[in-house]
Image 1: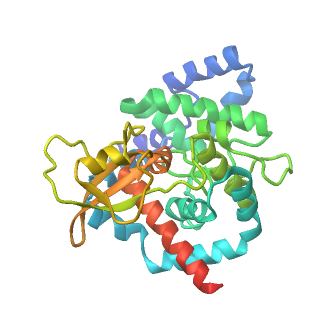
Image 2 (image 1 turned 45 degrees about the vertical axis):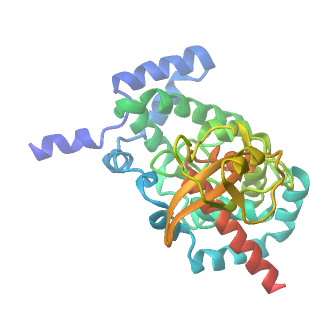
Length: 318
């Protein structure tokens, strides 16, 4: 029985019913060559490890005191300073062009891939095919990403079998999904190929452009600790939505930022279980922009706090 099942487990995707429909769509709607598509899917395999990975509980089930130590550690700061120093000219150029601070760009790359040390070991075509055709809960999303993957490959004149990424198909230093790649990735060195896998210049420019296109406001704060003496009754904390209330509104409700904030800034309020008890933060629009990268208030605050440690350490080295 095992001998009979083994070939099926490693079978390519050419004969999968859903893949056949997908190939028809790519041929009829996007003008791809059928034989070429079938050849590519002959080299795409279902990966059980990918299905196992996506079924694991998400990190956002953790509290802040559990989540923060995953990313805010001395080695990640040390590696970040090294990355910053190696690419300081490109980071300075990106900051000037898009208005996104270098430390935010470095922190995103640090949180996503530890500065390129862990960009993923799965073939992107395997990951996206497995999730598009054999993971019903999110099949429509991953079918769309697989479509975008083939389109970007054609646009960039690359081989779809050659790229690796995460188990979810996220790619490169900044872990862009194919749709984000096509919308926001940039050829920052002008060599004709937007290479976010191996070219740090393109990766840095792409992260900066992503933030700018999602509304990053140059010079505005990200998050500030706040004191709160009132009762939290009726307050919705940790919203992942564009802020509707202002800092002044929150001050009237008892939240006092520990450093001055413009009262006119739209902001949300965070309530977190920290290492030393409950923490409150006032988070203006740039905090929301970071959540466009990952819809988690914990992720966004981790990126921000890492960026601040990077900035402080970088200034100390100077």
